[in-house]
Image 1: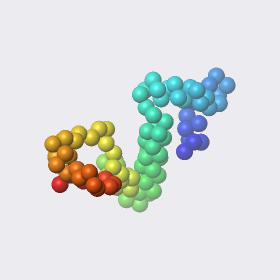
Image 2 (image 1 turned 180 degrees about the horizontal axis):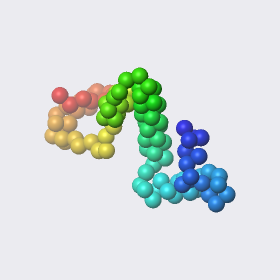
Image 3 (image 1 turned 30 degrees about the horizontal axis):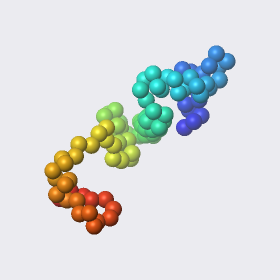
Image 4 (image 1 turned 120 degrees about the vertical axis):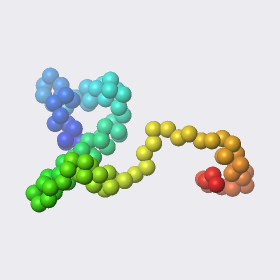
Length: 103
Protein backbone atom coordinates (compact mmCIF):
# COMPACT_ATOMS: atom_id res chain seq x y z
CA UNK A 1 0.00 0.00 0.00
CA UNK A 2 2.82 2.42 0.85
CA UNK A 3 4.33 2.05 -2.62
CA UNK A 4 1.02 2.90 -4.27
CA UNK A 5 0.60 6.03 -2.16
CA UNK A 6 4.22 7.08 -2.69
CA UNK A 7 3.73 6.93 -6.48
CA UNK A 8 0.74 9.28 -6.43
CA UNK A 9 1.88 12.54 -8.06
CA UNK A 10 0.10 14.89 -5.66
CA UNK A 11 2.25 13.57 -2.77
CA UNK A 12 5.52 14.15 -4.61
CA UNK A 13 7.78 17.08 -3.95
CA UNK A 14 9.59 19.27 -6.48
CA UNK A 15 12.19 16.53 -6.93
CA UNK A 16 9.51 14.05 -8.05
CA UNK A 17 9.92 11.90 -4.95
CA UNK A 18 7.39 11.15 -2.22
CA UNK A 19 7.27 13.97 0.32
CA UNK A 20 5.96 12.78 3.69
CA UNK A 21 5.37 16.33 4.91
CA UNK A 22 3.32 17.13 1.80
CA UNK A 23 1.37 13.86 2.28
CA UNK A 24 0.32 14.84 5.80
CA UNK A 25 -0.44 18.44 4.77
CA UNK A 26 -2.72 17.38 1.92
CA UNK A 27 -4.55 14.88 4.11
CA UNK A 28 -4.98 17.50 6.84
CA UNK A 29 -6.27 20.07 4.32
CA UNK A 30 -8.87 17.51 3.24
CA UNK A 31 -9.72 16.61 6.84
CA UNK A 32 -8.52 13.01 6.41
CA UNK A 33 -6.45 10.87 8.72
CA UNK A 34 -3.68 8.75 7.20
CA UNK A 35 -5.43 5.63 8.50
CA UNK A 36 -8.73 6.54 6.81
CA UNK A 37 -7.05 7.52 3.55
CA UNK A 38 -4.94 4.36 3.42
CA UNK A 39 -7.95 2.17 4.20
CA UNK A 40 -9.96 3.89 1.47
CA UNK A 41 -7.12 3.42 -1.02
CA UNK A 42 -6.85 -0.27 -0.08
CA UNK A 43 -10.59 -0.73 -0.69
CA UNK A 44 -10.33 0.98 -4.07
CA UNK A 45 -7.43 -1.27 -5.06
CA UNK A 46 -9.42 -4.33 -4.00
CA UNK A 47 -12.43 -3.13 -6.00
CA UNK A 48 -10.21 -2.61 -9.05
CA UNK A 49 -8.76 -6.11 -8.68
CA UNK A 50 -12.22 -7.65 -8.35
CA UNK A 51 -13.46 -5.68 -11.34
CA UNK A 52 -10.50 -6.76 -13.41
CA UNK A 53 -10.86 -10.42 -12.45
CA UNK A 54 -14.59 -10.50 -13.06
CA UNK A 55 -14.64 -8.45 -16.23
CA UNK A 56 -12.79 -11.16 -18.13
CA UNK A 57 -15.45 -13.79 -17.56
CA UNK A 58 -18.74 -12.33 -16.36
CA UNK A 59 -20.46 -9.00 -16.81
CA UNK A 60 -21.26 -7.24 -13.54
CA UNK A 61 -22.50 -3.74 -12.98
CA UNK A 62 -20.26 -1.35 -11.02
CA UNK A 63 -22.83 -1.44 -8.22
CA UNK A 64 -22.60 -5.24 -8.01
CA UNK A 65 -18.81 -5.03 -7.84
CA UNK A 66 -19.08 -2.43 -5.07
CA UNK A 67 -21.43 -4.72 -3.14
CA UNK A 68 -18.98 -7.60 -3.50
CA UNK A 69 -16.11 -5.41 -2.28
CA UNK A 70 -18.25 -4.30 0.67
CA UNK A 71 -19.00 -7.93 1.48
CA UNK A 72 -15.31 -8.81 1.42
CA UNK A 73 -14.41 -5.79 3.57
CA UNK A 74 -17.16 -6.09 6.12
CA UNK A 75 -16.53 -4.30 9.34
CA UNK A 76 -18.23 -2.08 11.84
CA UNK A 77 -17.86 1.57 10.96
CA UNK A 78 -19.45 4.51 12.71
CA UNK A 79 -19.06 8.25 12.54
CA UNK A 80 -20.63 8.61 15.97
CA UNK A 81 -22.59 6.61 18.52
CA UNK A 82 -25.69 7.98 20.18
CA UNK A 83 -26.39 6.37 23.54
CA UNK A 84 -29.70 6.73 25.28
CA UNK A 85 -28.46 7.47 28.79
CA UNK A 86 -31.68 6.27 30.48
CA UNK A 87 -31.40 2.81 28.88
CA UNK A 88 -27.71 2.64 29.74
CA UNK A 89 -28.23 3.58 33.39
CA UNK A 90 -30.79 0.77 33.78
CA UNK A 91 -28.34 -1.84 32.48
CA UNK A 92 -25.31 -0.86 34.54
CA UNK A 93 -24.45 -3.12 37.43
CA UNK A 94 -21.48 -1.75 39.40
CA UNK A 95 -20.36 -5.27 40.28
CA UNK A 96 -20.06 -6.28 36.61
CA UNK A 97 -16.75 -6.24 34.81
CA UNK A 98 -16.28 -5.87 31.09
CA UNK A 99 -18.62 -4.36 28.51
CA UNK A 100 -22.28 -3.92 29.39
CA UNK A 101 -24.83 -4.45 26.67
CA UNK A 102 -28.14 -2.58 27.01
CA UNK A 103 -31.16 -4.84 26.99
